[in-house]
Length: 599
Image 1 (cartoon, one colour):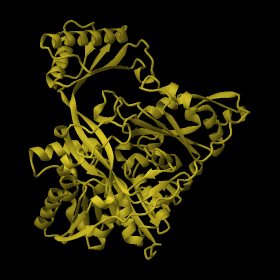
Image 2 (tube, helix red, strand yellow; image 1 turned 180 degrees about the vertical axis):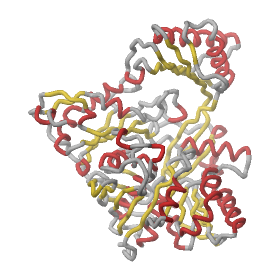
Image 3 (cartoon, rainbow, N blue to C red; image 1 turned 60 degrees about the vertical axis):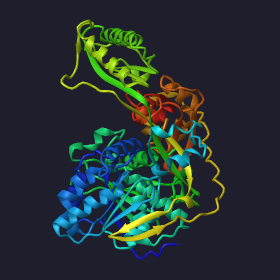
Image 4 (cartoon, rainbow, N blue to C red; image 1 turned 45 degrees about the vertical axis):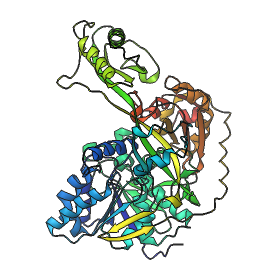
């Protein structure tokens, strides 16, 4: 067990992705300077598409390939205040070039004459081994696809864990920069260091990972993307999250005083279910987490208590994500308004595709491999096709040859004088073809991946320990269907919802607003009903998995093949399923009349 020497650690979640607002760092520093408790700031910048973008940047310029936001919007303007505050910074800003990121940060610190020690963690980047990896005959761990053409690979990165971060802190680091690690690892690393947690403290490691998961998307737990969005106040001034963590792994989620947003059971529950898949088997490099029995309780306004989680021994492998180029895509938006706008848009879209196909035949380029047309304002996101007097249409194509994508964009633009009336759009910038980036996932044995930690020139090595697996917990039984339901009410009156992506899968969490509502949600939201609500997006049927989280009175749905390939490989308007929870919230749910009369 941990040594428990420190009572409470306060950690602020300052970034959820590369490109997010830069307001978190000054907000947290002002909180600290006003007497607020704050020990660490954690920054999450990386996603699979980010890795491919950074890899292309490094290929063009060996000094690039990291999240420049950390250098330009955190270190450069605030290094003096960071040094005087005593707050330590932990960031996966290194991308595919942690050394360059570390060098840029160290140069700024030197210029300002500050006494801050920077650690750089490397070992996750496997791109240099791509030929050897290709020879292993690997298949994608989720859908069985063959290994891609080596010449098309953009990045290969194993997802590291938290113990290298903890070692860097133990060696005196004030700022820790990693390459690809799991999003929650920066938070867990701080807790391992502060509390002395060991590699076999499974429940503590799972609890710390849950804390990191709550913080990793920044204001998404303080009112961002919240079902009850009206309660978040002025989101221009939204507060970023702070976790007050105890040595037993429990923590309170809150935000700085004087900021907008909201922290309640709904915001925290939504974030806990966000993109977790099976809540009893959330695989991380340091532990396999079970969040199913975690309880979430409102302690006071904007203060929510989260109980410890359960954990099992860490897997013997690292999840490894490879990105590769797979042709090109092009897309753009046009608008129509006036009478019969939907019909006008449909005719315009068909004509654009017909013209482009005719041009492809002239240049002997072959057909488009995929075409997507969605008409927003006419119900396309809900599987409907209703008439409207104002619509936005998204048109997109895929093709192996970039020239074919350029032809499509030219024909969309060139149709402007032949269009039905009411065409409009924001002008001045034309869309351009871009590479289609696909994700290939596999497992790398831990023994094959030595990790290096450079703390101010002192290099430490790290290899994660290996453990024997233990049986998975028995899945929780769903509540029995009630027999007294007789009145229809909208699901949004009974539940909060949050959705997101897991590759080409969508994850939709549904949380009962009151525990007594849960049996009615379970009875109404069967896999068939969920599939029916999303059938216009689904590529295969019978692909809905259901998981129960009794501790938080919630259900998690994992739906396969529903994102058109997912992320940068998709032509969808919502390629990450961010709005799928909103679709489910329109469902009508039968409840007893006494419940219906109360909501």
